[in-house]
Image (cartoon, rainbow, N blue to C red):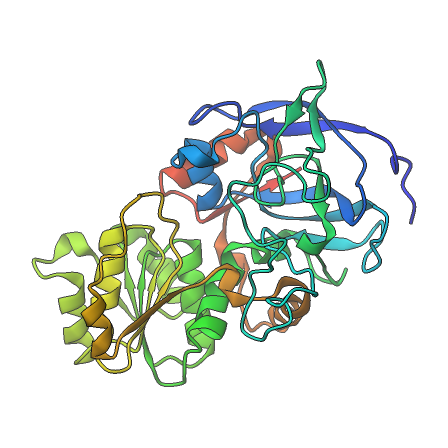
Length: 382
């Protein structure tokens, strides 16, 4: 399939961030054709993740670069490819992925590792890898607009390194598959790949947003015998039950610490805990909630605070361990296709993660819904 726009600059609508915490500005932007080993996508669906929210609020000054196009959880169709791209073509259904896979570096060649040396997630990155330039420009005065997380999906068209694009079988509904480009894959993969939850084990999840609920979905699929959900918002508990959470703790409703409650419920602590809230206090409680001897804590929350890990080195000699997960440990190009198939077979329920659907023009409303804790994923249709 060849599209009439191939090789030409495209003018399209984008939601541009022009300052920390400011409303995104819906405006016309110019999008250059893809260069060598790059792909230009027509974005059909995008949603907002807490990483986008953190960047929008400007929580980390080092990440601030304006104007900028945020967004990284999305799905779309290839409009055109640059020189050297051989694994996809115009018309292919695809997901943009914020952390890539070149297939050639020592990380990509190693089992159990997924942070590609060249295309790994980098919140500071604002230009393309190939030439250090941007592919977005303002329509009026042709000034550069910066990229975000290898993807910049808050735009009708975007240019992405081909290493950060994964093909999707056209049988799969893109509006659902878009959730696998970040949140759901991150949570499910943390349970499957990073923690490697064993059947009959116990799990505690701190934070029942989209990622935390995806952890629960993954833990249930792996046969966990007890899944404990911890959140200060009890409105999230009914949805937690749908994904297998059997016990709930609201830290505001108990005089005891969360880890003391978990110890009581499990008679000694869980085998696996997951910190999905992005709070140092939650990380400490998650660590102490695990069993002394076999406990594993997996860190998934985005921590904008400069605080260090709240753990004394000697505590690690008690048989507990702690690790972190990026994109659920998935190698995007080689491992996501299997996850797509598992979703199509009904092993994971993606529908429950879509709490709202809005037109792209209402992106600021979607931002506020997530910021206020009223949405899991707000699917925006471009």
